[in-house]
Image (cartoon, rainbow, N blue to C red; front, side, top):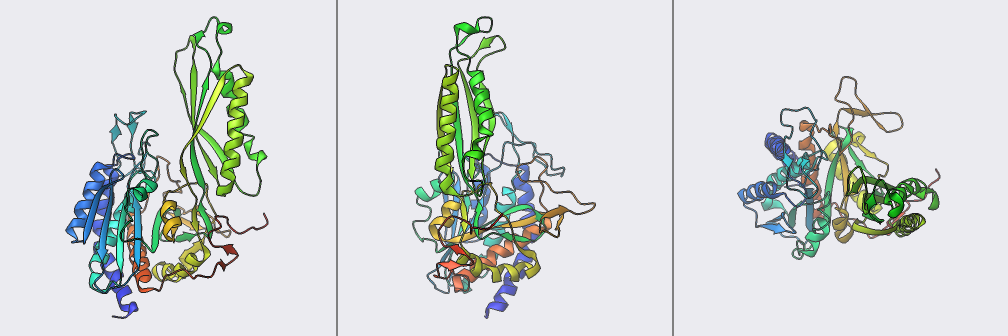
Length: 448
């Protein structure tokens, strides 16, 4: 069978499974589970993969990770790893659908938390299950192996636990067979069915930061008998807003404190205050300098008020880097699936995704799939359609995804997998393409 015919068959099979993909997505949306707690999600995934008759279904990887192995009957040495993340967020679900989540996790560390798929991982899981169904149906013509990788804890496990993409690698999920390409996609507030890509860093580098400021507890009526950590905390929070001026202005960095934790009550000057936040850098090499300056700021600000501060950096995630050779190899596939006018170059983001652990090790790339009621303006930026549901960012309680677009994600996975196994989607060995040095981790320089 020629490639054009099998591409048509992949599309036909994707259409046949489209309703089931929507049903999976809605079930998962109703029943979200937080990072490292994806018990029922992993069970559903494993059951569906086993029902397809895959060669292997590996479970319990780095917690609740699942890997399905499909060995094509047509021989071939290439191995493509298709990845979907499974975990949800501690965010209330206000998406307004009849399948909105009502789940509350009362036992999660720091909880209770409302739980929802406000980042779209329910879509990712359902689309990859659909792709597994499609590709299993043509296994007799697959010249290589497909790994269906369902990853837990992409949003980050509790700080006392291990989890996520790096933990899957360390657990031996890819020891055999070893991928020759990793691919994934993320739903995003762009026009429905559009594929967004970036040459260079698609996502930034990230680290969780914990700052503990310690004073000396005393009664609120006698503050001079203790050391109040609150003024030091205020100085740290104020100083963070100036850190961006201490590193190069040509690559974005940000430090955000999302949670402040105190122990005490209204009439007690407490002993400690803990700040939880995130450090993001568009270029990974800036991370060391930003962390050094943040640590200095915290320690010296605390000392100025007679207190102390300790700073820890946890759960580091490298940037998602799409090299120019991989992008060039994949663009014909993307354009075949969605149409040339719907494949667009996007800007970078300081969001993170630990799929970078796979892409950096095995090659490949990670792209965006638009799922909202939008169009692109003259500058290429998404704007809401009149009378649509608006544009809502990931991690927002109102985040939504268009169900009818999910079949596009199924087709992207299936076409990318087949094209890689046949050798049609393989990065060139040429180290320079489109002004990007392969493996540099830095987007091409340009005037701003």
